[in-house]
Image 1 (cartoon, rainbow, N blue to C red):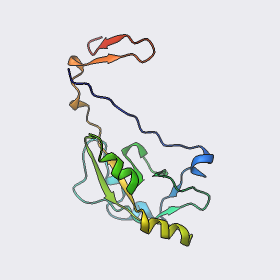
Image 2: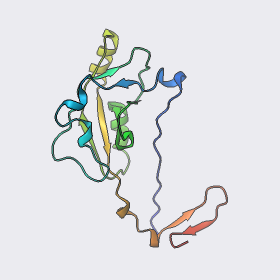
Image 3: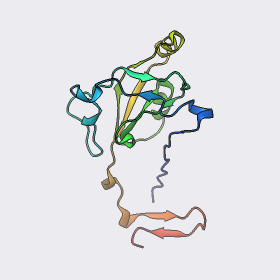
Image 4: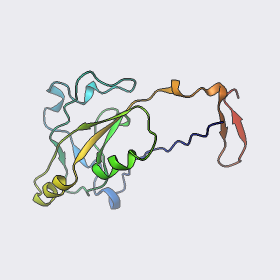
Length: 151
């Protein structure tokens, strides 16, 4: 039996870590432009590259490897830096794509940091069909009980 381990990804909202939540603001009139975030879906990749330009880094926000944004259905994806993108390459992750994006701010130091470590948008696709639950066995983490997919 092949063992597959799943790791959840959760964005922090604590001000000590992120400064302010969300860390990014949507550009003005963003939802009026073509191919905006709304073309990203849970079940499939878009046929065209999404426009993820000019998201605004808030003054009170702290720079982290993953940046939160206030967008509909944020579970579709997240803004990540090059360090996180490189880390993902070391794992077997299915159904994702990285898209180019741009983040702007009035802070010149932040602009320099972005040049050294750019950000991308990580788009995740949810496909339940990759797991055959009838052949799966799960271990309850608290009781160590083994549970089959048929239970």
